[in-house]
Amino acid sequence: MVVANPNYKRLPLPASGFGTFADFYPFYLGEHANRTCRRLHILGTTIVLALDTLALLTLSLKVLPFVPLIGYGFAWTGHFFFEHNRPATFKHPMYSLMGDLRLWWEVVTRQRPL
Image 1 (cartoon, rainbow, N blue to C red):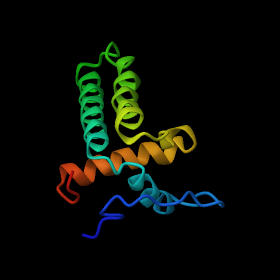
Image 2: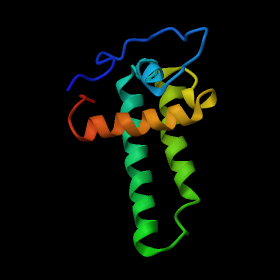
Image 3: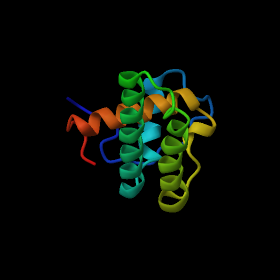
Image 4: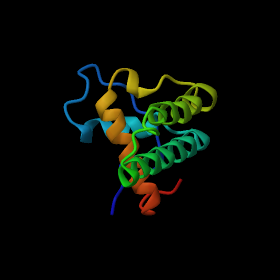
């Protein structure tokens, strides 16, 4: 399978914005060129998915308040301290979430190297 932007090349933000997620995803990947930033995203997303699964399996909502703190905490740490850019979630929240989940899936299924 061919993955989008395999080298995490930074791409310019188009003046017209993004019409589809397919248009956004290569840009999203370019905003994650730093390996440590990507690793923090993967770690944060893994913990978030584990907490969501725990909440579902135990029928307990007690862990859910920690989900955004952990998810955003890991991701934003990566952007502010390693990538030195502003997270895409500020301007494109839904596409950014979709990008995070797709990046996670591609990494854990070994379609994309970390």
